[in-house]
Image: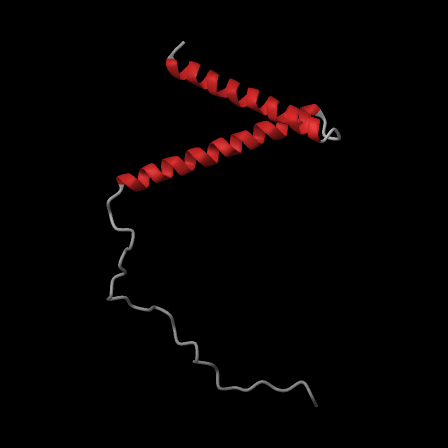
Length: 98
């Protein structure tokens, strides 16, 4: 077994263990929630938290690496290819009142 497999196993075990702990506390605080559902809530909440923290960390690392300006200037010589809206037919509508 390689290092990535062991690391993934450790990470999943940690996630499940913390999820069971949070589920137990949630079931203890709110007995109307079954233990299985509480564990599921804990695991999903932890996975979402790990994902949010990891994405924020990786985004901040990517922003530190980029030294390009974030403002992009638009070219000045642009043509509008939209037809004139005011060109209507000369015929007027008949009113509904007779």
